[in-house]
Figure 1: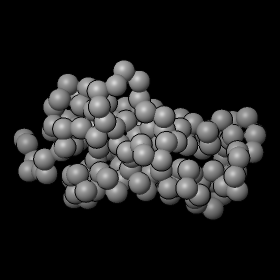
Figure 2 (figure 1 turned 180 degrees about the vertical axis):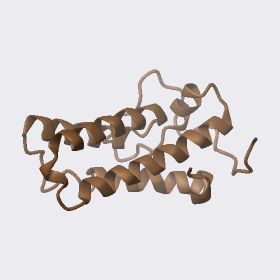
Figure 3 (figure 1 turned 45 degrees about the vertical axis):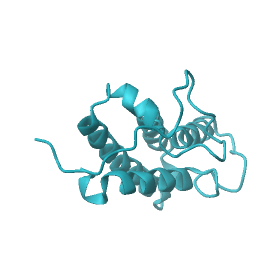
Length: 145
């Protein structure tokens, strides 16, 4: 069953062989060309994946920010690893990079650069917030299963 939805733009990026550098200021939060390739252009599948990703990303950030999260590094590392893979699947390159950086810091007990890997302009929270804002605009919060 197909849900009514907003028309997704055809592209935010030219058809490049490599994903954009995630930390570029002009990089979009979601690479829609990559997503279209992943879904073979199936708009309903794109909408479903974007909704699932937004829900998962928000849940993981909340869990990472919860009191006591730092006392469970293995669980946090696993959540971040999952988020990194999901972000790469939908073309959320900044989220993937932030999650991977934080995962490596947690698993390797290395302090990431900056005051907090969750906060700040290149942190996980900001990257997830930016990606989810784009997803909300594209599919609406109601379509996030």
